[in-house]
Image 1 (cartoon, chains in turn green, blue, orange):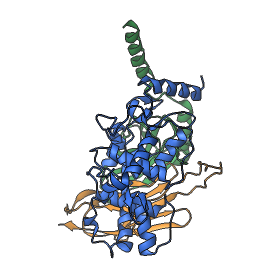
Image 2 (cartoon, chains in turn blue, purple, green):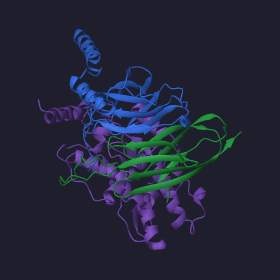
Image 3 (tube, helix red, strand yellow):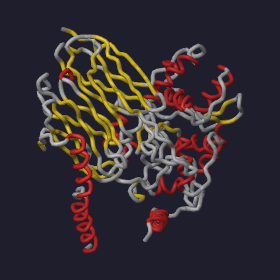
Image 4 (cartoon, chains in turn cyan, green, blue):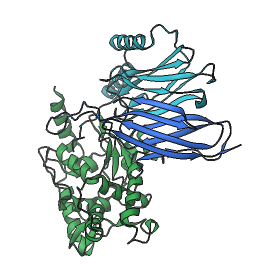
Length: 150
Length: 258
Length: 107
């Protein structure tokens, strides 16, 4: 009984310790380099972007992702593009989505590939050349066996 | 320990954890499982909602294709798709012309080549997958209604024997993973009951739609057993047993699995 | 044969912001996988998706190998009036699919 209690406790504490994605300075540096390479010194805000991504994916081949950016979406101020960046992927830039005032709302829903645990970054660029940044952590579990060849 | 060693030890433990009953010893024509559960129940919520999405389920791309192909090649003989809503539930079944038990895909292929005069295509070709999944999707929500008597009995018995026979370097029968140990973990996976009611299925691992035989070939390979060729009679026999074994589970093709 | 699925809402009133869903068959081969003989499978992806309405581009996407196979993309549109929406997917190896759908808008 004591042993079982201990095991349960150990399992629970492991869950708490290991589930959140650890901060990854390499990923951060990679993203920063990409960001400044593409958008130079545009002013940034770390709010206004909502990223809807599951906390855990049982397969990295297809993960649902919805991103939206706060904006009036009027001719004088709208979201021009949204970029998705996954630093752990072999090709981190996953895509760029273009919007216009006729979009009504800057929101896109797609399915992405993720090559491991990471913080997925989202960059929304307003027509006023202001950047809104957001992100979401995800743990990607691996299958017991890989069988795409069969 | 290396992961492969861990996996072998885990497998060995699993096999005896549920009681190593001797295959063939106590099996009569009764289902081993008392309560059937679709593979759907073993998926993450995101995978389940992908299957439930009646627009975005990627398997529906093949259903669309299959219906379009059916309109071109099959509609002139058949009365209409609304007369074919239960066809998929009755396969595999004995075919008098071919004098053997065949599955739905083989029936479609036979129709294509013999009656329509189209060239033969690979078992796992896009065309046969599309037609198979279109007809199976029509039967969505209905349970299998296969006949295991008469001309079908021999194939059923062979399929049942296959299911309970150990094979491969792992020395496991289908029965050991999907009945004795269903619901338990195999590394990161949860072993399902291994039902066929969602096939053809869109597997995230494949990133495409695949047939039940593709899944069976992978099962064999994972057991370190030599897979049979597509269309092999051993697989068709096994499919008949699996259809019977699924009991009252509703067909749900195209299912989505991880 | 239609390769794509497109969903446009019905009962749209002028001024509504509607969601348009799209799905297309494409392997989105990453170029990182190898076949059973260990030979690298060449990259083959969709690179571009665009939607036009009344000769104006209303949505556009640039896609990379990190987009899942059989790409699903849904986006929004402020429906002011009815008309024809043209959907175009382009990719490597001269891949090109164009589909049109009518958008009906009640005033």
